[in-house]
Image (tube, rainbow, N blue to C red; front, top):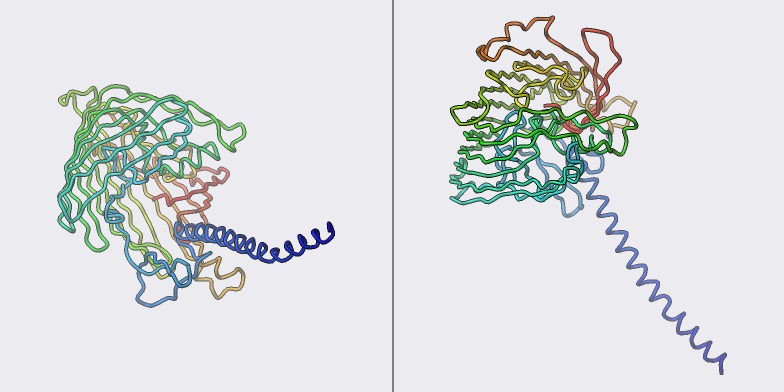
Length: 469
């Protein structure tokens, strides 16, 4: 009887085994498909960020292609790029992008989650609800952010509202906000995400920080026409400035290297009027970009406003992305700055290091007058398709880079006019360097090698995740 029962049990098990194995196989296939989908999406996002076609198929070339955007091909489950333009005004029809050349009166962040790491706050985590823009109607927008710095043990926040009058291609905005921020003037040198990665992994923090607490109000006019956008703002700023201390020296790598000290600022109440004007026209071509950017800002702080500081500060930026051929670009930037009066350190200009003079020490040359020239020649590897030295798919996703930088900084007496000090621009007072590099298809991700032109020094090597301008 026991043998019969055992035989029946074995028969039942063997009968259901194929069904169980089939069900398990379906689960394994579903799991494999999910993993494959996640990996494919990660690869596509890499190609999207760095404008490459390493993991995605490159669309065919046409003679009239001048620019492109992203489109998702549902049939082949891959992302293909067709041609269109990119605008600073009206990102997703609801956001404005910040021009790094100007200093805006509020914390400008279009991300919903804030994650940053620096030598002052260490890890900072927060949430952000960005200001959104209604281009076709009258509306009120609320915005704000809040987060916590684990080294400072302090909450930082901002919040405000704006009244908008959208007219299709133009928009008028009136707004006000209050804030308590860990702020910096170095947005034009390196963006927050790249700086966070450098600080977290390599113990290199390229920003200097100060506390800024207060309120601001502004009026803005924004326009967008085809591939061009314009942003004009006038703002009143009322802020209390505080120095912040270096709080951490931890990073994943870095060995015995130390973070730089965070320089002190002049503390006190600053009340000022700020005007910024930006125009952008950028077109993303198949291999490189073309277009130009222009930004100018003027800030006046006076004791007549009731603050503790009295100075004037002006900046001008001109950037050109000039195509030379289908595979070549000549890009350059001209930047100038002048500040008069009793200028506090948090309003000084500095040159040296990444994005300015990469063969020199970081912020080696401070002053209340600066002039900066950066130029780079980009050659896309697609031009070498007929050469059998490397795989063509690798070449067409890289750019060879040749660059040159020249800068001038001086400290001029505060009672001099803003144009004074630039007459000392000579071959002896200008610092310059040159170098070569290799970059991704859009030249954002790049490895560079820079040499000074005045003295013989070892090569300065740098790795960037974004273009210097």
